[in-house]
Length: 486
Image 1 (cartoon, rainbow, N blue to C red):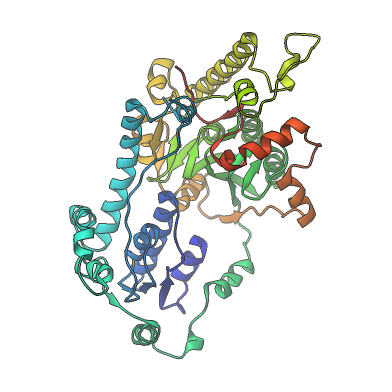
Image 2: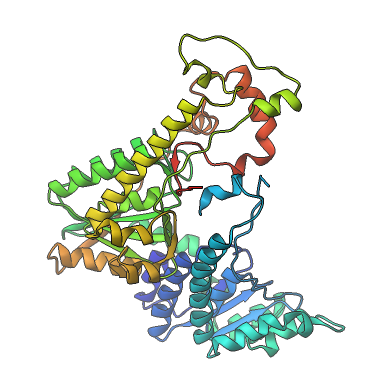
């Protein structure tokens, strides 16, 4: 989308832009900031932007604030609920405390408030500035929103108009009149974004040296990538392809991931180091979220950049071991029992509580992985343990905070990182190429999604049925998210 907007910015045949934001419900602040910057550049060429929606979500209104005029259906409303973290707690800090407590700890609340307030402050300041409002005005509007909506009639929309969050109302016919007023001409003078995108596909990259942009997004895991995930095999294959292209002088690695497997993250990091040995400069661009395993990968970069609203850090490790014996005995009335050749044999069964020696091994593994993580970050950022520890232990930081505390070198957009990569490679002229991974066949996608690599045991089938209602809340053991210590 940003490439599309940038192309339109330089296209003399494009006089303006109409944004229908009705279906934009959620987006990371980092992604919104990148899009907003592209829209600002578009406007700087004297081009008009008109925004309309049936109603504005928080993400949609942020982008709409870039427009010259904001319209909304008379039945619509602007909803700005802010940011928050709420979850279920499974028992009467960091990511793992939801499984060992009955409520969020005060230390965790303090940590979460810090970075949430930082991101929310960015949102209010940037959106309000574009509307020529004070952030305090918007905050007060939110605080008094229920009172402003009280009374008869469609007060929600009127409240948005009175608060200067929108400029007017328009239904279907009125919307067409507005477009004609600002852009004129017949309907065939309008080009849909999807149609305009085809122009980018046919662009000739030219003969200059190349800067490659590779995006890795989703959960990090071993093996081939699945839809919306980062498989180490697929990522390494992509990096090998890039390394084999002699025209590539620099790589911009765009990351958007909350973490995943420590081993898969390490495999990708090692491959990045091999590219650096070939003389390819590597700059990391941290998008909406680049935390934990994502930051592990980022340590391979020559420079680390972050969107201001990026969520990063979470330098820590934990694993979860379910204790099912009491549950199976008292709830399912099943009595687990058996024999094995060593004390480790029951581990595969899972129906018995883990042996203390098993717990000790898990703790050793977590500690070793965490120490390796700290070493990588320390070497990458030039920090000693004493300086690094207050930034680690699972703490989360905004992109702005990461620049201040040294976890990032700069804040800036993906375009900023591309220009920095060109500068590091000593290029005055270059082509920016975007790596495209070929999609697997539909049958392979289904197999990967279902993980049909082996037949599940009867116990696994039982557990899948039992935990199906809460499976989305439970991370996979052994993956890198955050460190929990009692």
